[in-house]
Image (cartoon, rainbow, N blue to C red; front, top):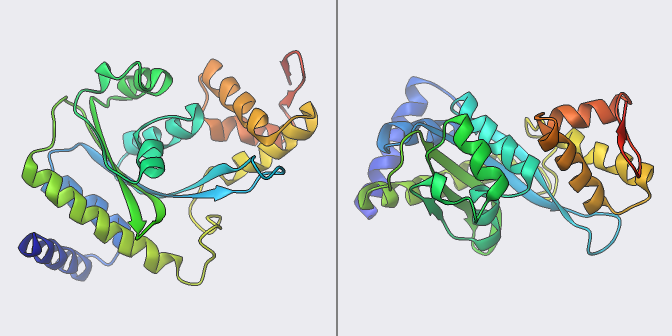
Length: 242
């Protein structure tokens, strides 16, 4: 394992010399070379306090995605509130799904839409330092099948290296504040606050209404949030209005 760690460190160092870029981006791109996957993405997640003490919600910043499908899978999980990234973050362990189509009971909303995006297998690894979880490294493949033992070992190492990159980028920032990231979802939390006021309900219910509207109308959650913040979409007790 130590030899593999050093090998991957050397490869990433060479990548950085040939093409200067953020460490997390280089790790995601190295995943494409070393593992039999179609795309990779990394996100930072944090618990954002709600109005009530038991009304916390997850904030997410998309650090990097290698292609549009990877970015779409990250956005989809926030929209429907389920998926491998969220499970890996919650459990602190890897989530390995070799045949995504068989997981409809586990993630009924995520699975169908993720398959439509082109994912046939998904693998998520928590980014964590000790007991502190920062986010996840998320991989997908457009054909079903597991990672090999060597690929799994390399993926775990690459997740650790991605964590080091995230920690370096977090330097100078509060770990509970992900607004400094290139995050299309910051507006979601602003919209949830507005919907909470409109409905006179909790932040959790407001976020559920946003997700339901996005899912029902086949829209990205970020687009629904933009409409709410732009006051072209308003939520009421009986229906959503424009």
